[in-house]
Image 1 (cartoon, helix red, strand yellow):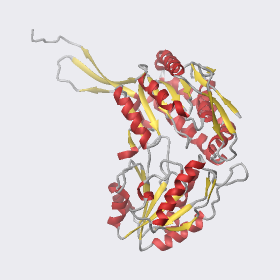
Image 2: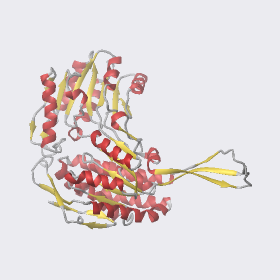
Image 3: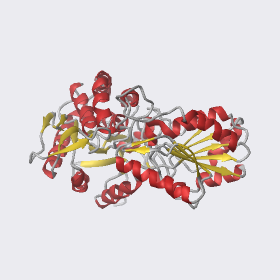
Image 4: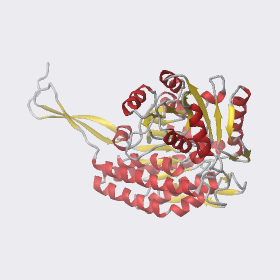
Length: 483
């Protein structure tokens, strides 16, 4: 059992009332972590610590802030074994998945560090004689980052990296499903010498989440909110932030389509679909949930996908070098299993997988999926992919857009111009031609449209999310007044 504390003002502390909660290993059923369960008093203390640290952190020269963030990336990488050990136990992900998490999270922090000298303004033409007008960006204050469990090092770091680079201090509200992983991010930043209170970590028991989140958003010190998670919870976050007039950045659910056109390289498309559908047991917001394939090539494509997916075996990630581990819980596996059963009763064909044992679900492919089935529209968030056969190019695009979600998408075709044309017609925040739907880089503008949220993480695009734009004028000559 891994003990986990809160991080407030540079100190690892127990919860104010001494409460704890347990995170259960989804494979073994044993306690993976016992974490401090924050109360509203702890929330207020974390926000106060971040507010107290803000003046000195925001006043640091950009190069000094960059140096500290770069040290943070190095410390994070040095803790890779600890992240793997804790993460595998808390979520059932594989060691390879957690190693990748730490690698990309470290690069996100390095990219954010490079942005410290890119926060610029402009001189604006003015009609006022003898006046100069400027637009300048400044840190907004304390930023609340609410991170999920499914890619916890990547998304935990994304919640804080650019806010820190922009001169803000942060409170990271970690997930109750991976408290040890998110607490370790805070510990790494403290070890790197960012300063007491610059990064604070709050954890909560599942039943306390509504009260803790409400209190965090309501705290006057908190000036920005970012959230990555499900669309239903994102709506609650947005509504709560609106009541307190707090801007919020939301990256929510997805139902990513992978379009296979009639001229596509089927081997390349099958490899991308196999990776995109089953990586991390399909528990990624960008996971390939739908494969929309031209019926001219559908049979050949499905055969190639089956060959690739049949090589993947899910199970306890500690028992061997498996590509796939478990889902986050048995309940999640059963939920996905119910989607599969619904599809089968309505005419879909199970061409691979479907087996569930506890929290472990084997890679599953459903063919001949139609709009009458729940899995056509609902985000599966599991190792199952729906193959939908389309009669034409027009139909592939129509089906791709027949979803309330709009996060990631991809198009496979031998004709690059055709791919770009199709990509421009798909309603999504991201689209990749001849590449997988699961793709992220630290410097790219990451985010969705429609029910997949709004705002952008990553690189220069995130500067606007975590700074205030101010208009400043300097009167350099006499000013005329009407009276």
